[in-house]
Amino acid sequence: MKRLNTGKGLRPASVTMTVMTLCFVIILVCPIYSLFSKAFLNADGSFAGFANYAEYFSTPALSVSIGNTITVSVASAVLGTLLGFVYAYGVTRTNIKGKRFFRYTALIPLFLPTVVHGLSLVYLFGNQGVITGLGWDIGLYGRTGIIISEVIYTFPQSFLMFCIALNYADGRLYEAADTMGCSNLKKFSHITIPSIRYTLINSLFVCFTLAFTDFGAPKVLGGSYNVLATDIYKQVAGQFNMNMGAVVGTLLLIPAVLSFGVDRLTTRKDSGTISSKASALTIKPSKVRDSVFYLICGGITLCLLIMVGVLFMGAFTKYYPYDMSFTWDNFAFNQSTGGIESYLNSIWMSVLTAIFGTIFVFLYAYMIERSKCPKALKSIGKFFSSIPLALPGMVIGLSFIFFFNSSVNPLNFIYGTVIILVLANMVHFYSVPFVTASSALKKLDREYENVADSMKIPGWKSFLRIVAPLSLPAILEIFLYYFMNSMVTVSAVVFLYSAQFKIASIAITHMEEAGDIAQAAAMSILILLVNIIARGLYEFLVYKIKKKNEARAAAEDIEVYSAAA
Image (cartoon, rainbow, N blue to C red; front, top):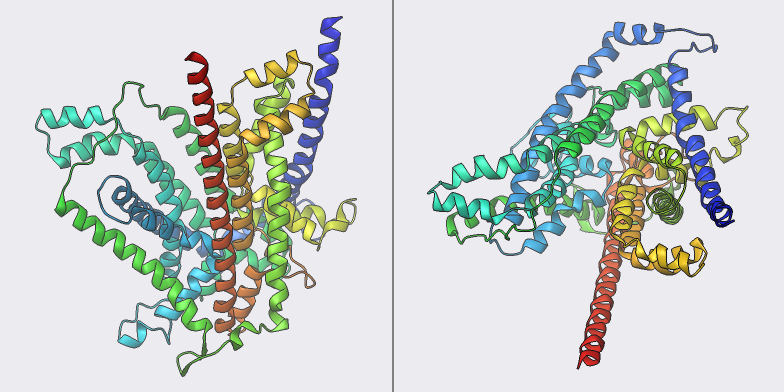
């Protein structure tokens, strides 16, 4: 009788997870299947086999894009990883002042669409750029401009990865090296580098994939230098050649899948564990080292601040560079490119994505990590949750077109609405929030559920009253991640927005196309502002939660001490 009751108790959780898994199939598996099937069909729907691929590779103007994309991506990966490592090393392994300032400044590129990185470079190095006017013409448009913009885009991603890796170090290894008389160079090459080798590999592949699949920078700075991302845009938006667009979309998956495989391999090999006997690394004073890294970190920070500064210059001047008088007119956005409504639409879309994305991710992670659902169902959930990590934004957007725009699809009614944009963003940015939620849930003591079961408290009640409140910092982090990324995304939604619901990142692209770069700069500042406010609110709430927990812990300690006395 007891077993029968337990079985009944498991049913709601299993049903909930089954329904959520089916939702995953609808918004992930079915669209990807539609993309692949489209690549092997002719325009009339007949089977074409590999004919579309043969046509693509036999067209010189198209196939050359692959070589261009690889060239740009390799250069961006190497430079982005190098700068990210050096900057992270300066922040974590030296005694330079202003480390918090350097940390936050490094995140600036994450607060802006990649289109804006290109826009800042136009103000600096374009034909009428500030630095070009001083006599330094770098030939911005083409390969050079794309690489610089992609390095700006990939730098903070690499910095965050190395920051985590370099923060964990066993001071005993460095103390032993000191007693053996090892030089700083030898300690660096024999201790530091081996300890972060898997992070180094991961950073190279992540940066390569980000540059390989990015659309914003090539759209603004590419000129006649074609890459795969702009090929998709031209084939789909320009020529309405959906089958050839699907072909290019599948090609974009190759580096993403490789990066996914490398990430899984390195994660498995790199245990990342620090012995309980490890001692904290003591950073020794060195004026020469600190001066060098202060100059390096300060130089990179200055470049990032200048990138934002020129946006303000463009947004608040009448007609750069001919009329530099102050004006607010650039914030009166043209309706033809989206108007101020596109900005409000972006906020609305991002809030909806953050709300529903956070609920779905956290609940699904809870079902996988903490519920008593069947192991097979949990394994399927984990597998599905890892797939979005290997899907570029343009591939998701393109696959959503093929699936949801089909007349035979009963969900066709969401096409062209904010719903499809929200779903695309939820899928596109799913994997990182899922890892965050899973990590937070794994840290919670299993005794919470055991006590709830012994007291016959329903699972949903213990989830709402115990698990969710204890995981509130992780939930806020997931919410912020979804919101900020949805505000700046271009690639995932460039094919999905409608004329009735334009968003800010796409409006910037249209403004740049129309030559209204001053209005594009103004819109960029508004996006930067809302993301800074969101980040500030997150930091404030996390600080309040931390203080509240510390006060509660102190009160509990006092009670224990009083009882013992």
